[in-house]
Image (cartoon, rainbow over all chains, first blue to last red; front, side, top):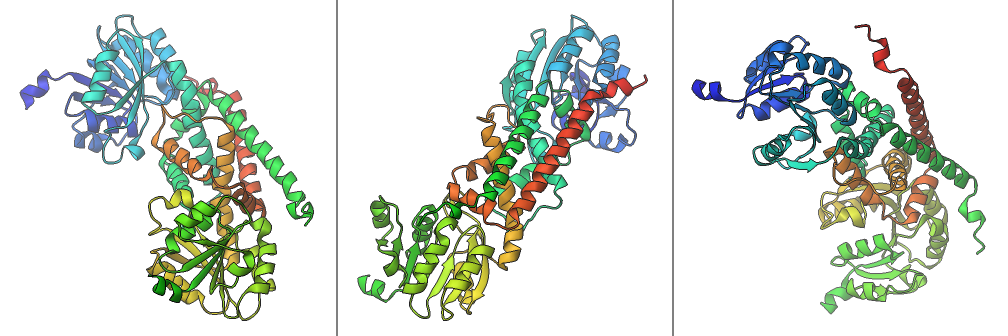
Length: 262
Length: 262
């Protein structure tokens, strides 16, 4: 086994939070994994997942580098990887937005690296027992290894691969993730939701909310602030809510039975 | 079979729309059913369900009368039933709100009738292949036959019975149904929702919306206008949405990296 391990491709995970750990759990049988994270207290988790914790410089020398760091530190992390990485390395990010991170990677990383921007449309909450059949968006940015990566995601991990561009991704994600998180935020502020006299559709709504309510604050930040289309979608949602509110208040002052002649 | 039928309890369904038909489909083996509806074109459906279409007066003479008429015509319908019904009949309504209809039934119907206000927390969309395990709220209004009715709903139909009062029901339903329908209305106005790059939580949200989007307009009217608690819940939802909107716009003018010193 040790001999096999030594011949395995090295995977460096930059950012060993909830998603970095999920990735390690599913990729451990295909790669020898090292990970970097500035947070303390990750030694036990790393050990359980067979991951070696190391410096950012060292992790950046892997064959494949997976960036699972928050948007707020993304540019800084990519700058450091750019200095340390080996020629021919493949770099893959997994953030919830794609336009800004892709532009940063293209600008800061050497030309000889392959760059693929991805967005696994799931997290620790939705992955549950397994990830087979779940979706991942894949955007080729530089080089040609997106083909091999897509094949690996499909065949080895059983994911449904959606090939797209950062711009198309962010437009659609602004609606998909933007709306889910906005609605979840509003409903969570309404206080504990009923669980007794509930309908099927309300149960589905509650389940949707419970899946995103434990997401790291960085995810909400990324979705609402780092997606160039998020503000338009959000404004549209709030404007439509406001006009529906006005309609309903207007309607409630003219009771229908005042108009009925019989 | 005809002999058995002639000894069966007579059930009169007032309002043979989507819910009246669903009720007939599930109650046909326990009752001999007649139904009244002012809309034309129901003969074929009635025949398929083994239901005799008849006048409101005639239907009101059944042993058990099920009112599945819209809130807008509820008072008128109850007035006519009050005149025609037999002593000792059991009257049951199935609307989405309970305070106002209960008050109308108590006020207009004779003292010798048993009255039970119910709200099956499902409809043709959520009933799907079967109703077993689905929920129904039951409010005793007059007489004692709510016990036998609850036992029937539990044992014969396999429903989960929630015994409650019209006031408690409307408070909880204002949140459960009010929010589901409000969110559905806003999202439907946003246009066709994405189906490709979707997350699990967005899929649940879409499913919740699709379950209520085909509800009759009367259902939305009842939920938003005939529930005394709906306006408070709605205002709270819109106020929280507006304040979240203000927070997000304020936050987006102060980008986080302006404050980071390194």
